[in-house]
Length: 119
Image: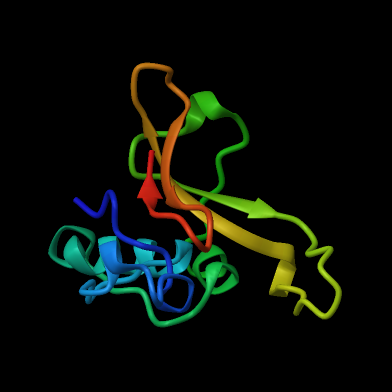
């Protein structure tokens, strides 16, 4: 399980509780790592690209939440509003893994730069 893994080293420097961490996962790295772990079952490995690359590489689309199954990827399209922020290819700004859970809507992801992988 990657729950609790910090997002990115640069946001955790100087924080003693995470100073010894060797693994940091942003949203794309979490998906890449999970796909790598499951490469024998999936029959492929994702390259080092970001969420736009993942979106284009894994082109099946669900149009409603009812069509999702645990393990499906959910891509978020948007536009950065921070001045000077690099706009993302295809407007893909985030990716998470659908889990379902008790609510039927839960996802697992690395959402905040100063946060952790969480449900």
